[in-house]
Amino acid sequence: MKEVPEEVLRKLASYYNLFKHGDSSEVIPPWIHNINNMTKMDLEYETRDAIRTCRDLRRKINDLEYEGERLIPVKSKRDKLMQDLQREWTYMSYYLYTLFLHSGVEVSEEDFDEFLREETGSRSHITNLSSARR
Image (cartoon, rainbow, N blue to C red; front, side):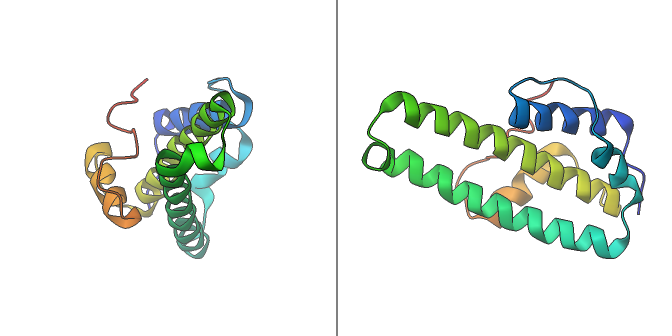
């Protein structure tokens, strides 16, 4: 297992804060610092859980894209939900990327984007990692 660089943890914190609080502050919550202290078993569990969450989010985003008007007739509410789902998606996909880095997998954000696209069954690149650089 490898130490996740501080810059990656700051970026994860930024995505997390944007998702949870609507503000992309780089204040790093204690649980993010603890990623580097995860045991192998914790890391495997968190990775499986994050992949499952990403699949669920991808399904929700697809449902909203294709059947959104039927599911949520009010456009402003539908747009708000899509924005919230996309923020959660960006945070969760970057969290998964961080877990991969901690496990010792040497992968670029672009290669990880391809992996996650395959894992979630999407036909397009969906992590926003290569385009959402800050």
